[in-house]
Amino acid sequence: MSATTRKPRPGEIHGVHYYFVDDAEFDRMIEAGEFLEWAEFAGSRYGTPRQPVLEKLAAGVPTLLEIDLQGARQVREAMPEALLVFLAPPSWDELVRRLVGRGTEPPDVIQRRLEAAEAELAAEKEFDVTLVNTSVEDVVRKLLALMHVS
Ligand SMILES: Nc1nc2c(ncn2[C@@H]2O[C@H](COP(=O)(O)OP(=O)(O)O)[C@@H](O)[C@H]2O)c(=O)[nH]1
Ligand SMILES: Nc1ncnc2c1ncn2[C@@H]1O[C@H](COP(=O)(O)OP(=O)(O)O)[C@@H](O)[C@H]1O
Image (cartoon, rainbow, N blue to C red):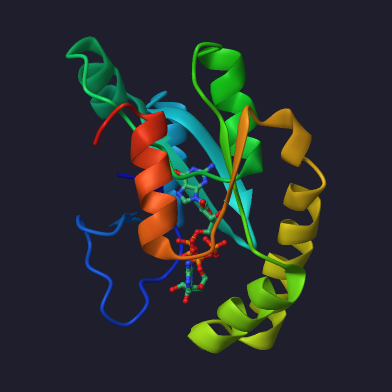
């Protein structure tokens, strides 16, 4: 599970959806070398704690990180054997519709997320595989197949 400095959305729970931390705690985790990777995305910081990932991999457990482009680049450096999967929207209009439709971000954050999405779409070719996010069930099935979990 990732740590983030983003504020929880309604219904999001500390320790379930994210470890919601403040800037000082995130700084401490960076200093202590606790992150496998971390990045700033649309005004908040997000990072993957290293230890739980290493423990899972050592135990042979298929391990999925849901991270942004900057994080994917760091993982590629640190773990060249990782499979990088690009989760693409069915279309630009559908991406905008979903993000705006969620109704959880103010306009300035929506703007920053759309700019990030544009940059990420331009980097799709860096990834090993692309999955188009049509239906959740469909994309989850394909993702589990890539992870050799059925
Ligand atoms: N590098 C990195 N990116 C992350 C991490 N956790 C989440 N993200 C990415 O940060 C972005 C925003 O995540 P979030 O605020 O939860 O928004 P949501 O994915 O739209 O619900 C998405 O692109 C996530 O994939 C992490 O631990 N590291
Ligand atoms: N396959 C899908 N079908 C319909 N809505 C989706 C699908 N995937 C994501 N969404 C919705 O789109 C919005 C943004 O999706 P999310 O995965 O959080 O995007 P991102 O991580 O790029 O910000 C959310 O409200 C989410 O529920």
